[in-house]
Image (cartoon, rainbow, N blue to C red; front, side, top):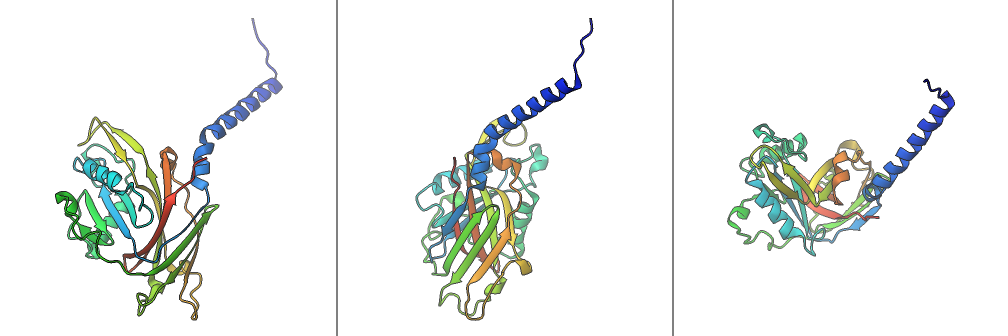
Length: 280
């Protein structure tokens, strides 16, 4: 017995399958896409905040306690106001048997840049760098002076992100800005994910379920001639206007996402804004 199916019937069936798949795809991904593309707007205080960089790896057995400390210590009311934690996952421990799914070579290079700029004495994990200064107090739980030193009033940073376009301005404040060449400033934009979990099957953390917060999923630096679109002689305000890089696929797995934007001068953080993206 033979069956005959017309080409028109096959075409209609294929079209129905495509439409059904498209509807299912939109239903599944719509909350995430809305989250990643939600408009974001923030303004800083005048005082310089603390940029806390943690260099870590899923392939390092000493790193999970540091990751946990970052999650516990900075999930507080001053988050995105006074404290801006950023976990950069490096790649140089991948050879131990487990490739860090959040690791990026550019983050390893960033850590070595701190070494070249003499912000740190050596490269290791876990390593904390706070406002471009190495901090070893985590190992002894010695927090003396690290977050209590008076911070200068540097100025206001305003940021708006919408439709994958960033607009920002920085209005410096005297006397901090005196004799500073702000045309050398750079703006950094990080997409940060929290509530992430990974079950490692190999390496030093094999058979462990690791949890991560404040993971840097993407990093974009605005520099060069495209960095400052206007620096008027009568107005010392810096203006930035930049298209954003493509949102990485790994960001779709993050229960929570945040934008963190910070300004640096000669490699040292000046001002920052951040905040969780709205979920719909």
